[in-house]
Length: 207
Image 1: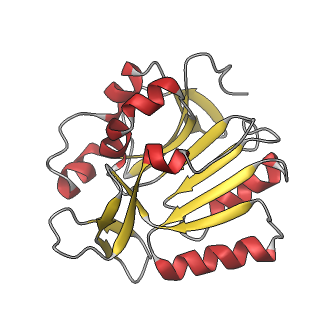
Image 2 (image 1 turned 30 degrees about the horizontal axis):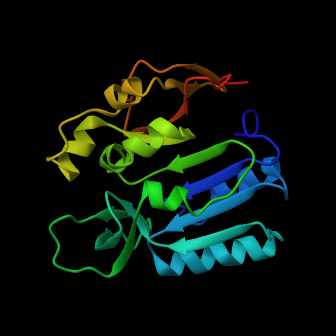
């Protein structure tokens, strides 16, 4: 992130947890950039807001909500130990606001590059597919949490497509971090999950 984000960029932290990625981004994008953190757990939103205040980030704000395929409401299963959260598609409860990616992107204003850190606990691909039309016109850079396909199938058996195929269809170039340097991603997730950097066509790519 420090190598590739630039002064004045916009950083959107989806699945922000306590805002760690946002704080890292703030060092690079500076006061002329902007930060938007989306977090579905209300108590963690309060933690993020406190972290932003403690670090004097006037250009950062928090939205309570989860990312999905449409705007509305949803329910998430949360782990009290790790504070992780997973979307429950079949739950009758609807206690968390839900945003789609195109609407969330419409909340941002920046002259620089838009970066999205996306961790939706295995539901990244449906969120991206729903925003395909917007992504074709205004492709951002991504820092994607790519989960092992077995984990994705266990959580969301209805997902049939694959993340590498979708990114390739939009002409993204993808890289994994290997021992402190970037290497082209072969689409294979090693272990439970990996962070993948994605650069759209026309972007110069990794520093």
